[in-house]
Amino acid sequence: RQQRLRCSQVSQEARAEPGLPSPTPGKEPGGIRTGTSWRGELDAQCSQSRPRLRTHRVTPVAQAYVNQRKLDREVRTLQAQAAQFARQTAQWIAMVESFNQALKEIGDVENWARSMELDMRSVAAALDYVCKGQLQPPPS
Image 1 (cartoon, one colour):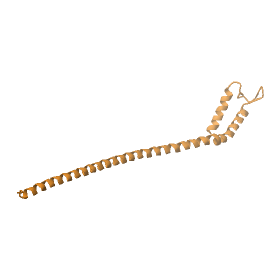
Image 2 (tube, helix red, strand yellow; image 1 turned 135 degrees about the horizontal axis):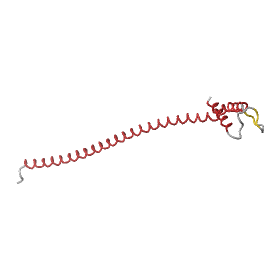
Image 3 (cartoon, rainbow, N blue to C red; image 1 turned 30 degrees about the vertical axis):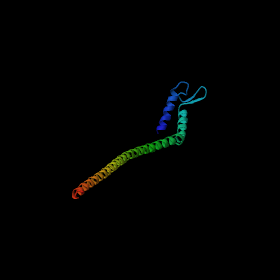
Image 4 (cartoon, one colour; image 1 turned 180 degrees about the vertical axis):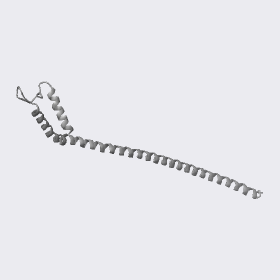
């Protein structure tokens, strides 16, 4: 319906221009058809071209529109997934860093325990030496 209106509008605009057929019935000098027969031919040509427009121009445009909408949906989905992946990655990095810190602390505690053990053995050996020295009579 819109196409027919457009064709009618085109025919009215075309007849209003100088040098084109006038809207009066009959023929002008030079053999140009005017009036209703000219309008009928133009309407017939417009109605014949309508299916071709649909198949050759509208279908690829409609398909491009559908494809663009699919791409837009896919882009939004991928953006959401990428944001979620970034959040998960940040969480994993934080967990690994805290685990590394815990391992360092365990290593520090282990070193501290080893040094404490060595110090305690030294103190125990010194006390043992002192105790043994007091119990034995001095050599004569």
